[in-house]
Length: 253
Ligand code: SF4
Ligand code: SF4
Image 1 (cartoon, rainbow, N blue to C red):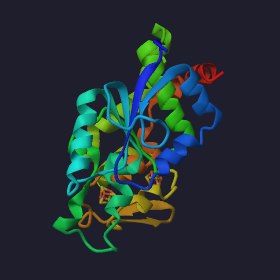
Image 2 (cartoon, rainbow, N blue to C red):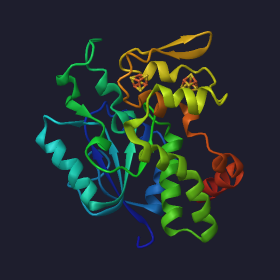
Image 3 (cartoon, rainbow, N blue to C red):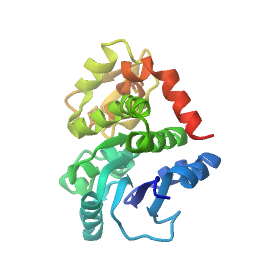
Image 4 (cartoon, rainbow, N blue to C red):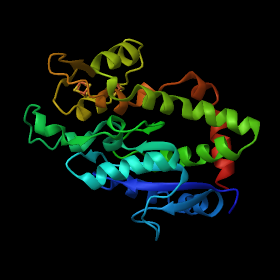
């Protein structure tokens, strides 16, 4: 037990899809809980629900600023966690909660749901709606190896987590121009359409298999950039892919 990392899970405004994705790890989740993670609190999978001092907190959902309790919860999570991970699109950039507008243009009242990075410092982003079960599992394993592993494991964990930490550092300052300059113009776009689906104001359309942005409509929310699977492209991860994969698989044996 002493070698495990302590983990908490704060659940704010969202659809609970990230919790479902976490649970979809089945045996992998049981291995994590058995060997690496001491789950200190979580509304659905642990008895304790009050926020406690932990190594890593996963936060699902955005913050409703009209809900005083939610604002206090996210601040308490930050105060009591060494590392805060924004899990899923709602925590990272508002996502589905920004869609709660009935297709209207933005109005001040619509800012009621904020991504957690607008209120606290976030250390790691796990974008996606919902993120894949494997990605959540891999981040948990890599967090363990970073904190408790050998020098070689720490180096691999650093390489793996770096793009997700860079995304958190960038936060919601990203806009369509970032997608254009860092993904599309670099030849990394694979035409999946995730960016267009993520845009809350329909500023992106897919034309001939490539995203076209209407910059006048862009509210610079960062959703398209962080939802794009190619925005996390990292030579560190690609060049260490086999070693990273082996480290994760060995940990889950
Ligand atoms: S185009 Fe602008 S408004 Fe649309 S998702 Fe990207 S950053 Fe947000
Ligand atoms: S999400 Fe990324 S890879 Fe997919 S279409 Fe948009 S820019 Fe291209």
